Image (cartoon, rainbow, N blue to C red):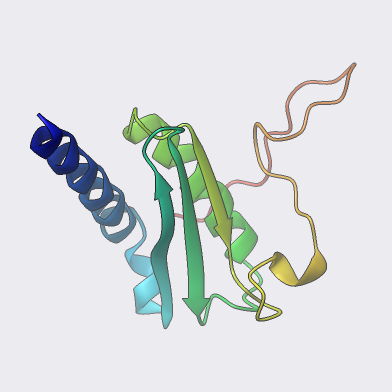
Length: 119
């Protein structure tokens, strides 16, 4: 039975990788890359690193927003997506702390819907 669990985990990682390739070919077309840094199957949390031309790109925050919102919808096992561009070499968005849909809610306001991705 542990073999089935391992196969399920490998399948999840493959589905996340396929999601990135299928939904964001623009990343590669523009010299960028997207890689799975960590995948916690128990919590359903995945960390994605955007690299190459994505570091410092003006629309990378929209790309990150799109990855976060689409992945949790398309892959039911994924509960949370962490994505960074590593603009400062440390993988933390160069000290910025951008807001993404569903992450911030003011007490009296609606959830932040964020910008629409151009793809």
